[in-house]
Image (cartoon, rainbow, N blue to C red):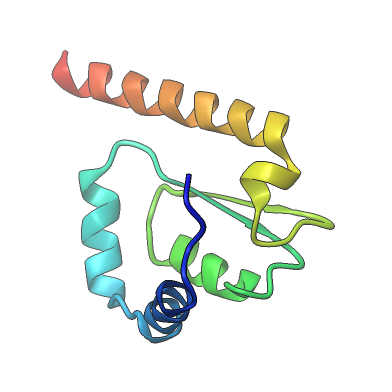
Length: 102
């Protein structure tokens, strides 16, 4: 894997800081996906936890998880818990799809 160049990193940060999705669009996305889990860390300085909470509030049926003493790299800092959470999210999503198809 090659390291990201400085321009790529800057471009990614600008996109993250200026990205906006309306509450209506978030609800529409939530309706089209069987299970959504929004994960953040309480010390995330790239995406403030209150922004993740806003996503959750505008995406009916979503799950919100905020881990203590965790930053932006939740999948690295809480590897086992993160993988377990993914597995549970996938199971719930597949169950909802199966129920919908009955």
